[in-house]
Image 1 (cartoon, rainbow, N blue to C red):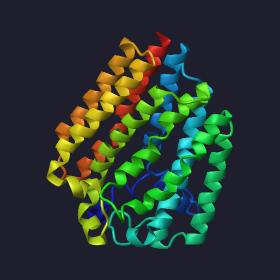
Image 2: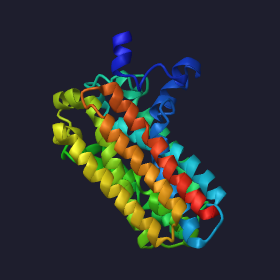
Image 3: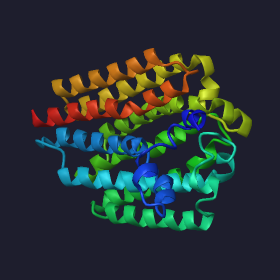
Length: 307
């Protein structure tokens, strides 16, 4: 069992396994509430956008109510997205050691039960979304097609991380839309920068599954980049820093934003230096550390708004 846990460390041995009632464990796992890092990574571009909007509007703080709604929405919609992903990938998950214990692949939840659960989570997410203005509601709905498409892209292209970036970065548009009822160049640049960030960190994550992906016929940037991964991370993380920096400048960001961006950049550089693509445990640790990188940038935005 120790060997198994070492290989699927993000799937077992967490608070859900230890404390949750047996009847709800499979559904909590479907939503990845046992692994909240993905929800954080979905949330952070939302908070960045809200912080950027506060800087541009001259507000002393981002809209706190919006931050709360984004928090709830990110966790719920990430759960819905993961449930949909597991529905689409249930046959593939059986072939990958890290994912073969997922609820559908293991038989703990049927496909029909999972679909009903995905719909329920989506309805909760919709109730959160309609708390915003009409433009933000329409902007949020526009992301659904990308979310639905993502699970299938790994079958046809070595760049599924781009589609994941399009989906996971959508919040970079939402905070601005919720504040101003429109989109401008600054949030679009933030969105593009976030996409580059997602491609980088999800490439690190995908290096955990290279052998299994080859066996299952799954494509990823980890397989495409291989030994060139560090060089490609420099490219994508560098693009993220430049694009996010440009967004901050256009929004009127000052010294505090610059310090937050510098801390964000330093964290990404540390990831590249530390990375060993043959060390799956380290890949998972570095992937998870992107929550801290994102919070550093958000802190810079909040401080800039306060100043």
